[in-house]
Length: 371
Image (tube, helix red, strand yellow):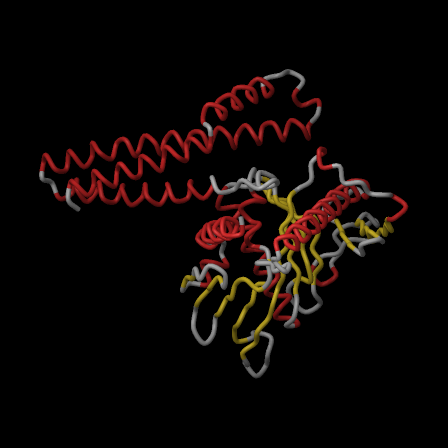
C-alpha cells in the first residue's frame, strides 16, 4: 500500500474514531466511572447485595469500555509511526506487521462503531431471552436447545453473566422452551436483532429413513425491567400455580413444589421459573419475566399506533430471519441483511457477532429510511 494511501486511510480512521468518541462522550463516561468508584468504595455497599451487584457490574463495564476506547485511539495514533518506520527502513517484515495491525484496527473500529448505533429507549438494558420450539416436532425441540447453547456460548465468549430462569424439556430430545437473562449493559440492544423465527434444514438424526427435515424455533428478546418502568400488575388478575421442578427425562431437580407458573389472565401470558430452591425466589423471578413481557407488549402497542399513523401497515422485521442449512450444503444466512457464513458449526458454537453487527446496521438503516 502506498504511503499516500496509508496517510489518507489513517486520517479516515482517526475521523471515525473521533465521531465514536463524541457519541460515547468520554468526559461523561469518566465522570460516571468516578461516581461509581465512590459508591463501590462505600462501607455500606453490600448492605443491599442486589444494588451492590448493579453498581459493581456497571462500573466494570464502563471501565472496560473506557479502556477499550482509549486503547484503540492509541493504536490508531501508533499506526502512523509504524508505517513511517517501515518506509524509512524499507523493511518488508515491518510493513507486513503494520498492515496486519491496520486490518486489526479496522475491525475493532467497525465493532465499536456498531455500539454507537444502540440508542433505543431500552438498548442499555440487560436482556431477557425466550426460545421456544415451533413447527418440526422433535427436530424443532432439538434446534431450540441448540439455539439456547449458541446464545449462552456467545455470552460466555464475551464474559457476560447469564442465569437460566426456566427450561421445559421435551419428551424425546431437546427443549420445548427456555428463558434466561444475559447480564451485561447493552445486552438487550445487542441481542434484540436476534428476535424472530430461526429455521434449520438438515438430515434429521431422529428419522430412521435419514430424510431431510425443516424445523423452526422462535427467539424473543426483552429488556429487563427496572423500578422506573412502572408496569402495573393487578394481583387479582394473576393465577399462580406451584409444581415440582424437573429436568431431562423427568429427573427431579427439587424435592418440594418450588417451581412457579404465573398466568396473566387478561393477556393470557404465561411465565415460569424453576431455577431457585425457594418458591418465593422463583415467584419473584417469574414476576420479573412477566413485567418484561408486559413492558414489551406495551412498547409494541405504541409502535403499532405509530406505524398506523405513518401508514407502515404494521409490518415487522422480526419474523423469519435466519436459515441454518446443514444439508445439502453448509450455510447460515440472515434473510434480512444477506450476511452469511459457510460454517454453521461455528455459528452454533456462539460465533454470531457478524450476524449481530449486520443486524444492528440493517435496523439503523431501516429507522433512517422510515424517519
